[in-house]
Image (cartoon, rainbow, N blue to C red; front, side, top):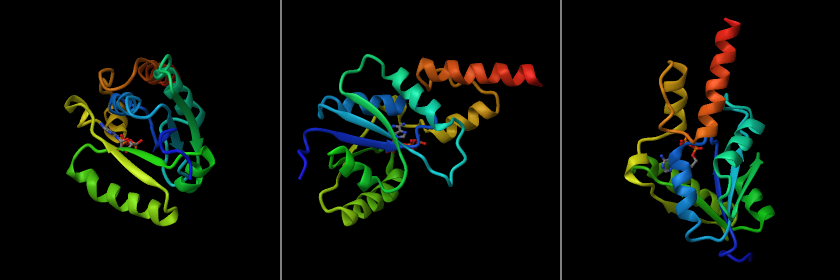
Amino acid sequence: MSDPRTAAVYPGSFDPIHLGHVDIIHRALTIFPKVIVAVLENPEKRALLEMPVRVKLIRESLAGLAGVEVASFSGLLVDFLRSSGARVVLRGMRAVSDFEFEFQLSLFNRRLWADAETVFLTPNEEFVYLSSRVIREIWAFGGDVSSFVPAPVYAELTRRRSVASHRA
Ligand code: ADP
């Protein structure tokens, strides 16, 4: 069994990474010496940002933070865990509405690999309402998301908007 103190894997779509995610990563680094942000390539979901861009923006948003790695993966999370030498899955818990899905997921993962353990962290209250889906929607309708996302994400979204408006 790998050493549970070595790393926690934080999986998600991160499309885009937002300040709630960043808060969870900061908190995790006070518990685990290493956090691997694992960006899921989900062919069933139409993404706003392409995978290499998502990974790049996460790296830029977390620049200077010791103990963070960013990787992409597809397929089973437990396979990614094993290949990373980690057994802890890190998940954020915003509200009761997250609970049912997260509970099911954690039991599934443990069923697939008995060593897998899920650790839930809660964000600061100011980030509880944030989700990438809502941020994508606000952005699509022309709203200001600058207070929800790290500066590199906002810069990329703004760049895309200006390219799109020049094309129009
Ligand atoms: P989102 O739910 O924002 O679309 P992801 O699917 O990428 O983002 O979520 C990855 C992980 O981050 C999940 O465990 C999710 O519960 C957690 N998370 C998402 N938003 C927040 C938030 N505002 N505060 C804390 N955790 C969050």
